[in-house]
Length: 176
Image (cartoon, rainbow, N blue to C red):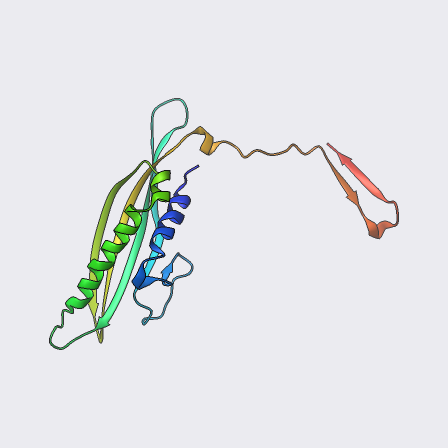
């Protein structure tokens, strides 16, 4: 069964091995706050939508948008206040992320298609030039009635209680 959470896990597994950010790939709840921990990559589920495949049985084409944010930094140089070094690092990280995701066999085994890729770059310069690229990857996969069926459970027919504190041999049975 493919879910958005499963797709998120597979994208994370694909980018966690990227060389420059190895050991600095994070999921929500584990995001670093140190300014000197660059490069780093953050992977999160940005959204999910379901499009019905028609009347009758519950069937959807689900699109999970996984957001991968890569951040880099470099010292600002007086000769190059725009710090093209950061831009070059960002383009390299963007390419590595795309190659890692698109080359992930386990991921593409579970989805129908990578419907779109959208990337935006941003920069900020203080004493250190910071740059980031946000890549939104939209993955499509099928969800059918089996994905929304109730979980299998064993019917509860009674409860046996043995209470050692009540004395030897004491037990009770509640039946339904």
